[in-house]
Length: 274
Length: 351
Image (cartoon, rainbow over all chains, first blue to last red; front, side):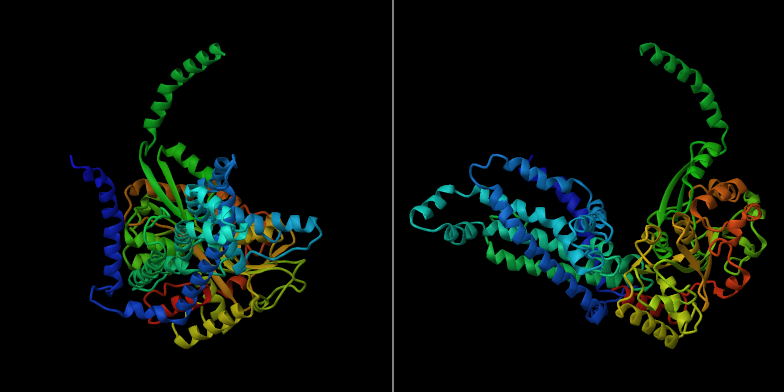
C-alpha cells in the first residue's frame, strides 16, 4: 500500500465535511433562491449596518490580537527561559481552561464581570467602587482575549524553546545589553511563532460569535452573530443566499490576512496550520 | 456487605419479571417521541410521569424563539413528534402544510380547554393545535428602583436607577414600536413600520437600553440587577415570586396576548403517541403541575377554577377583561407585502 493512502480517512473527511459544504456555500452565494446566477447577494454587504458589523468585528479582532501578543509574548518568554523547571506544569495550566467548553468559559466571564459579580465585589471590598463592564465593548474584548490567549502563548513558547541558547550567549559576549539581546536576537528569531500566534488568534476572533452577544447582553453583535442571525432567524426568503455570500466574504478576508502573514514567515517555521 | 449485595441482587431478579410484564402492558412501550418546546416551559417531572404511564420515551429538546423553531422544522433536517409554537407560527405552519391534522378522538381532554380558547381564528376547530398555555407581553419593574408606577411603554424611554432590558425577539420588539405609534402589531404598511423603526432606533441610540435579552431577564430582575424589562407574563410571575419588590404591568397603550399550542409536525414518526402526549398535557393534574412550575396561565378549566385568591388578583396570571381587551394577537405576517420590513427593522435594531 502506498504511504499516501494512510491519509485517505482524513481526505475523505475533509471532502465530505469541508470541501462539499464549501461548494454549497459558493453555489448559494452566487444564485437566487430559484437557482439563477446573480451577484446581488454581495450588494447587500455594502449596506451601512452590515459594514458597521464587519468593521466592528475587524476592530475588536485586531485589538484582541494586539492584546494577546502584548500579554502572551512576555509569558512565553518567561516560560521558555533557561533553568526554569516548572515550565511544563505552567503550560498545562495555560491549556487547562481550554479543556472546558467555550460557552461555559464565557458564562463564567459573565458571572465574574457582572455588576454584582466577583470582580465588582472585590473592587468594593478594596474601597474602589464598582465598574460597569458587561454590555460594553471592553467586556467583549476581555472575553475574546481570555478565550484566545493560549493560542498566542503556545506557538511563541514552542519557537522560543527550540531557539539555540548559544546565540543569545554569543550576542551577550559581543557586547549586547539585555534589551538589545531581546530586540535584535530573540524577537527576530521568534517571528515564526509570532506569525503563527497572530493567525491563530485573529482568525477565530474575527469570526467569533456568541461570546459578543453574551458579554454585551445582546447589544454588540459581530460578523459571526450576523451570519448566524441571517441563517437561523431571518425571515428573508434569500437568507441562505445572503448568508452564504457573507460567509464567503469573511473567508476571503481571512485568506487575504493569512497570505499577508505568510510573506513575513515564508518557510512556515512557526508550526502554524498554513 | 456481601450479604446485602446478594439480598439486593435476589430482590432485583425477583422484581425483573414483574417490571417487564408491566412494561409490555403500556400502550407505547419501547417507542419514542421527540418533543420540541420553548426553553424553561415545562415541569420536567411531567415527562417522567408520561414515560412511566405509557412506556414511551420522551426525547425533549428546546428552542428560544418561534423563528428558530421554524428554521429547524422547515429545513426538514430533523423530525419532531410534538412542537409547541405560538399562534401566529401555528397559522403559518398550517398554511405551509408543515403540521398534521390531529385525530381529536385521541385527544378527549380537549374538552377541558376553556371555551374562549376553543376553535381559535388561527386554527378553526382545533384541527391542528391544542392550547398549552397563554399569556401576555408587558413590563416588569422594580418598585424600589422606579419611583412612579409604570403605566406606559414610554417608561422604556427614560433612564431609571438601574438597567433596562428589551427582548431579543423580532415580533415582540417591533410590536412595541408599532403600538407606540398607534398602529396594529400586525401592520403591513411601510410607513407604519418605518415609524416603528424610528421609535426603536431612537430608543436604542439614546442609550437607555442595556441590552436585548431573553431568558436571562427574569433572573436579573429577581436578583435586583435590573430596574425594568419587557417580559412574557409567566416569566414575570416567576421573577415576582422570587422578589416581592417587582410588579408586572400591561401598558395602557396596549400589548400582545398570545397562545402557545401543541401541534404534530408532518415529520412526525409516532403520531398516536404524540396525540397521547397532547392529551396527557391537557389532564388537569398535569396542567396544574406545569402551571405551578412555569407560572404561565393554563387554559384547562379545572385549573382555572382552582386558582387561589392571590392568583386571581395577579395581573400576570389572570389579567382583567380591560387588559385583555387592549391586547392584540399576532397573526402570521410571512405572506405580507412588507414582511421583509419586519426583518429589516429588526436587523437595524439588533446589529
